Length: 142
Image (cartoon, rainbow, N blue to C red; front, side, top):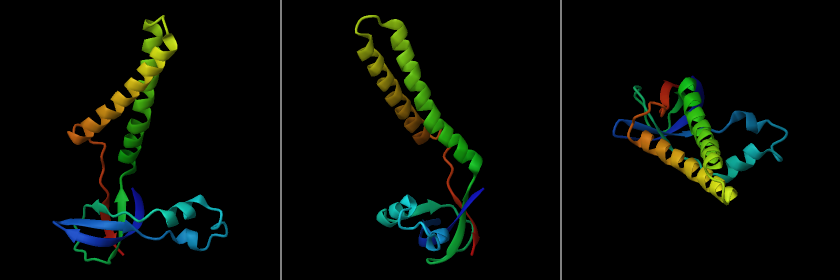
């Protein structure tokens, strides 16, 4: 399980909303001025995320939130490899089938197959066909 410290910001309808806590490693780092992580963290606003919890919590509690790394790995493989495979497959099919003005057809076919794979992944996730979407859970209260 991959764990992260978070703070409960809202509780509604048996669902807990948390925001990630400040990264303690950044406070003592000597490279803070040139670090892109610190720069992005200061520019981007914190975002609340819904998590599942069986523990009684209240707003302001610090909790340890975890997500299963196997599900996270499978989801990232699906979201990165499937569109890439679709892109090359579309380009390869167009190269095999078309002889006139091949470059335009290859590029168009590659782009269409790439976009189709993204649409297919989105539809599959919204229909709950795939079990790759893993919600974080509250492991313990700190």
